[in-house]
Length: 297
View 1: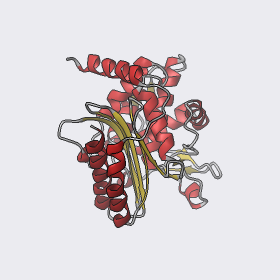
View 2: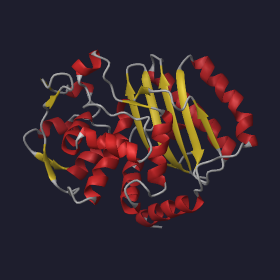
View 3: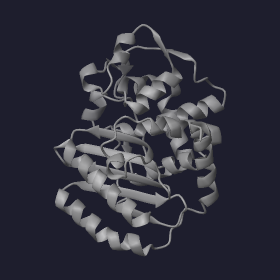
View 4: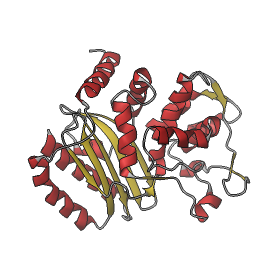
């Protein structure tokens, strides 16, 4: 089956199955929770989890409304706003945007630049003075988590518009304040934050074809499925399981949030905080994913 048709059928399937977001107790899931809680406790990490099957029958929420530093998971909100403005006719995805490494602090408007050595993608920095399309930037922002691409898009779209779009979808727990790597803002505690519930809400909107519209949601889902950082949620799933997801990490923080296109599709968000070794964080996320998959498939 062609990829385009698969994506369209998935969205139709999710929309058909969805009811009102409520979920009744699931005996198999309930039996699995103590072991998951034990794993989390042994890790020593602060962990929030938001899990819900797209049929609306099963969910598990653990500290779902606790704010965490969003790291790069807030790029999901940027992606949605890009497609929203395209749908409104304010821009086209193939519009060019100048590539520059100069941004302005939320604190005082002073200029700052990103350090390529601190970014997960460096080739875009060599394109300074040239252009990339909005579509190309969104691909880099999601699939290889380019901070430079994210900042360029945020400045083009407007942070206030991104924030309004998130709220319109009911994801009030995500608060996008500023460009990435704004050191002055960070020092004053001005950071982009999210809750597990907020990310669950945004990803459900994409999975259900309701983030902007059905076609936009399909394209966003396929972009998220091309994610190249796959040692969190995907590592806890059977080989070949399709996952549309976005990771985020900074010092002592590692998150993964995705739509798992299993036999019984589900959305899973795992936010972790406090572990020094990123490999411990990704292993924890993978183990939580593995147990939830086994309990609900």
